[in-house]
Every structure is written in C-alpha cells, then in structure tokens.
Length: 355
Ligand SMILES: *Cc1c(COP(=O)(O)O)cnc(C)c1O
Image 1 (tube, rainbow, N blue to C red):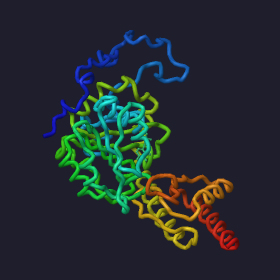
Image 2: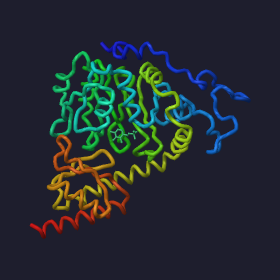
Image 3: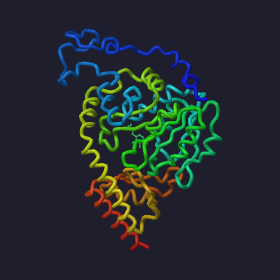
Image 4: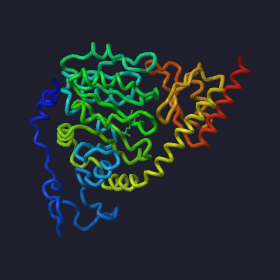
C-alpha cells in the first residue's frame, strides 16, 4: 500500500516552514513596511524592490488552464533542476535511502542524488532503450524512494512504453517521477492525465524546451495535493523571481506561436532524418519523439571536433552507457540544419578520400 507519510523524511514531516512576510499578509494595502524592502524604489524599475509572489499564483492559474490541472496540483521550481533537488530533499534520507535511474538518461538525477548523499541504483534500459521492468523490481528495497523515468528520454529521444511505466506505478510503493521535458514534441499522451489514478506519480515538465524559456528557469511538477504541500514547505520561499514569473506569464499567452515552432521543429527533425540517412558516415539514426536526434557514427570524437572547427556544436554522448559511438544533435532552424548537413557531407567526402 502507498503511504505518503512513511515516504517523507521524518525531519521534513516535522518541519515548520519559514513564514515570509508575503505569506502572513497577502491582501492590498497602502503601505508595506513588513518585509524590510527598500521603500524608495528599485534601480531596476517597476516594483522590483518588492519580493516576488512565493506561490506564483498568477502563473499557476494560467498553467492550470493550459494543462487542465488544478493550480493546487502544480509546483514550480527554478528550473526542473530545482524540482529534482527538492524531490530528493523531501523523500531521501542521506546515507540511508536510494533511488533508481535507468541509464542512459538525464544526468541531473544522479548529480542531484550525489549532492544529497543518496545512493543511486542503475538499471540500464534494454537495447531498444526501453525499461528493464524485471531489473527494476529486483533493485527495489525498503529504502528505495524514487524511480526516475524520462519520456521522451534524453539522450536517446524515444518514448518509454506506457504499459511499462504503468507497471512500475502499480508495483512500486515509492514515488515514480516521469520527466516529460520533451512531451510537446511527442505524439505520446502526457502522464498528467493519470495523476488522479496514481497517488505515487509525479510528472515533471519545463518551460525550457518547447516553450523557449530556458533562460527564465521555470520547472513544473504535477502531483497530488499532499505531495505539492510538502514540496512547498521545503522550497526556498522566493524561488522564482518576479521578472521570471512575468516573462513566463506573457509567454504563455503566445501558445499559437509556440505550437507553430513545435510543428516546424518536428518537420525539421524528420527532414534531418531523411538527409542524414544519405550520409555514409551515419551508421544509425535512432527514432526520436523529441527535438533532437541520437545518431551513431564510426569515429564520434573526430566528427565532433570537425564540426567544432566549422563552428557547429553538437553533443558527444559516446561515453554514455549504451550510446557507444553516439552524437546528440539538437534540431535547429532550417538554415542551421542546412549548415550541419553540408558540413557532415563535406566530412563524409573527405573521409571516403582518405580510405
Ligand atoms: C532539458 C531537460 C530538463 C529541463 O531542465 P530545466 O532545469 O527545467 O531547464 C529536464 N529534464 C530533462 C530530461 C531535460 O533534458
């Protein structure tokens, strides 16, 4: 049986959270002398002398309308990276608890575990980059608190089979964190719709990818009221600044434009696949549900360095589990993709002359 209280660290369960001035008085007033702000103003203009809304109410209301989730089931972090860190701090007792990750996957789960002195158990994906469900079951013990599943997965690009994720949700009494950073590029349904079904599910999304706000730092977590409440207790009171909240709110009104970029990205991704398929250098192009492609080549470091020389930076993932020989390429604009294809074709010609 799932028992949230048993999963939460004792010190967090007992924690009296910091009560900020903005928590204690929320209404309208003529004079605010409660937060030791600079009453004269701010050199940054507007009302930047004031602390931001600690609960990001306007932004959550807008996200609630877009995502079809009550605002009370949304937690916002300073990027997903902060969301991940807070999951560790809420659920994992340093030096005792463990989490399961399924490499190759996003690197921050492991780094965040290491920062929090939490053991990481690795159950690699299968050769098809799917979950090894049996291996996961075998690795779980009474101190396993979190399982991270990234879908579509970074750096492989594929979506994880839904049935397998549901199997884990049904058979694990800890928290299953499904990271959907790339969901906007996928035909897969978001797991947000399953939140009412699974009390142990948390879904992470971000404004950093499709929404084009990587510099603004807004990560989202969707979960039960109870999980959101404990996350709010642990987060720094003012974790998202007013400029970030305002920029994000305005950006969320431009959904049409963002959807257009998503369509263009997906069509450019498919074009890149067709073009790269002609290149003799490329041994394999993995199917992608994201805004990047994982490709296998013979000499990844040479290809990487050649492209750097031409001013084009991609990601060398050849050192990563199950990604031997692999490079990760973000889908660019049509002009950027054209430059990439041209340079890879040039390299390929040079390479065949050298044989
Ligand atoms: C890029 C990415 C994120 C986004 O992190 P932010 O801190 O929100 O920018 C989260 N998860 C995965 C798997 C990613 O690739």
